[in-house]
Amino acid sequence: MTDDTPILEISDLSAGYDNVPVVRGLSLSARAGEVVALMGANGAGKTTTLRAISGLVKTTSGTVRLAGADLDGVSPTARARAGIAHVPEGRGIFYGLTVAEHFRVGLRPTREQVDEVMSYFPALEPLQNRRAGLLSGGEQQMLAIACALIQRPKLLLLDELSLGLAPVIVERLLPVVRDLATNRNVAVILVEQHVRLGLEIADTAYVLAHGDLAASGTAEELRNNNDRLVASYLGETTAN
Image (cartoon, rainbow, N blue to C red; front, side):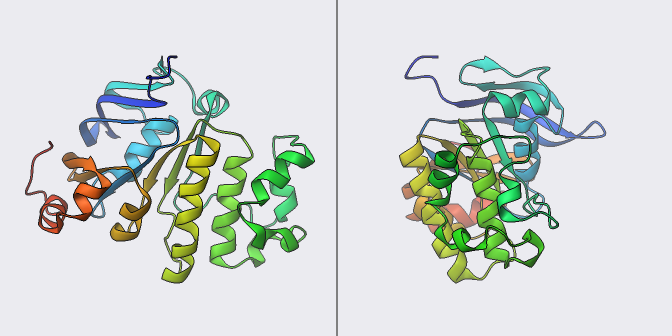
């Protein structure tokens, strides 16, 4: 891997379920320290894209590369070990385990590693002995991201981070995502339903419509062109 090699590079990716493509011909990349917003209406293919990256959905064509290495045939477990951390829609936490126990699932982190991760989510510090099922929605999302970070990933996939959360909680969480990308040099792919908030912290954005890439560019370009953004959600533009 050279300094110019993206952490994630997807080329002409098609993926779906039962031989029915949900995403078609998608190409995108993410570099270390970059937040990439992946947007689109419900059913556009955003979650399928993340699942294809982490190996949970088989691709039908195209390539997925992590730090220059082709992931074709690499299992989800091996991809996680290689540096992909995936926070799925619904958070993927264990309601019966405490906050502290989550950090020890499959890992033996040092106290320093735990403290480093907790520094991003100080609200979890006094809750370490509380079961995840008793946490608020915002606290559960913090825990899910913290569990991903404890793995020290190269690539962090965040699917619908704001789902079910009050806007004020989302406004607090998204800047943390920006900070961890910058400070930990992690590449982040963010699927976000709050379009404007997502674009505020992102560097680059891609919009999917009906499985196809409808628009792409810098987050600033899409923020400043509302007509193009709206048309992209409706599938009325082509990729550029």
